[in-house]
Amino acid sequence: MYAYDSTFDRVPTSGQYTVDDLVGRCTNDPLQTDLVRCVDFVLGGFYLFGTQPFFHAVELWDPSSEHAAALEASVKRWTGFFREHRTRLLGMGRMLHLRRPTARFLEAVAHVTSDASEPLRAVVGLVNPTSRGIADNITVSLYYAGLAPGATVVASVLNADAAAASSRPLPAASTRFVVGRDPAASLFDVVLPVKVDAFSYAAVALSLAEVPVATTRWAAAY
Figure 1: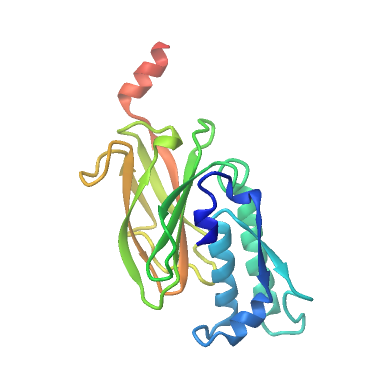
Figure 2: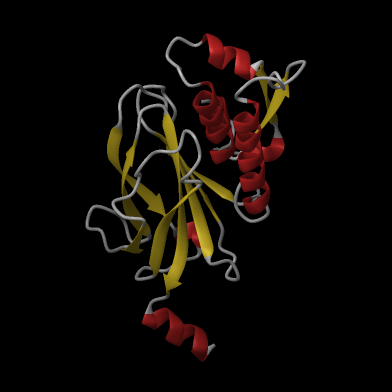
């Protein structure tokens, strides 16, 4: 919630968030029975909101633990994900606040860029902190992504093989949406029908696939 509320007037990467003994907390949490999945869920929640966790512990995990390799893989996956997208999107782009965290329902943000050289225009981060699966329609404005009404974007799932990733957040592996086409949304919006499993997250990429004909003709004229 703090990461959500404190980033209306500053970028998410302007601060770090301390995480005390993450493995110990996941081990002692009665709601979490899978250590690797719990750690991966926490990491996903931080990085999808564009924030950098600062781990405060003697060691992140016991090197001799049977889960050591899987825990290391989770950390590498998420730090790699953050490095890959932070230049134009995560933390450095514009973050849209979609669903405020309440620990009772789906939490959502979108990181967007209007960089015309970048096909990937948005990364939508979805986090479900509840003990039940949630299906919902998430409206994402692509105005700040520089996309005009009629532009076509392709939605695809990122980090789908991660431990705490939702099994099938989109109706298909990749789905096409037209900006402003949904009658329930405004002129610059797309509506994503998503489903996020209990105690899991989803990262959805929105990539530009086709610009509207009118926009193409206008750009050519000038």
